[in-house]
Amino acid sequence: MLVHAAPSVILRGMPTSACIPLLKALADETRWRIVSELLSAPRNVGELVERLGVSQYNISKHVRILREAGIVETERDGKHVHCRVAEDFRKQMARNRTGLDLGCCTFRFDAPRRRGPVHPDVAGDAGRARPSRRAAGA
Image (tube, rainbow, N blue to C red):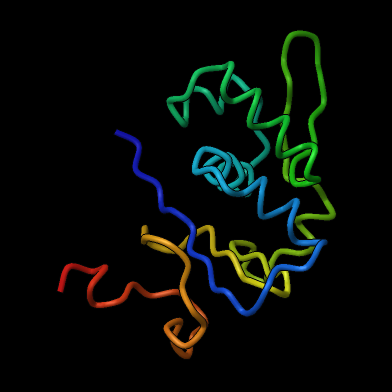
């Protein structure tokens, strides 16, 4: 069974027009998972299918959306499509390479699974999103 951490989001204000395409592209959990995989290493579509347990059709569809948003770059090699995180997107990543600061919000690709966005006041001093007592089942 493949276990993955869902991203967390820290909101700081209304998204700017530059953020909107990225927010739309990252609005799907499968696309989050693809980006998380590609942050660790470039992979081809077949490897993403195996690692994520998603059909080749759906991986290809999600990779196209991520490519159009400038998050992922692809390169065809015969029958294989190799995917990697786009250099411009990688430059936006935080120092630890698992966070993305868009100005309006920050995304953490390594944070524990949680529900919905986190307000900055809940994020704590480390800037890492933490589940509320209610979300944690307390």
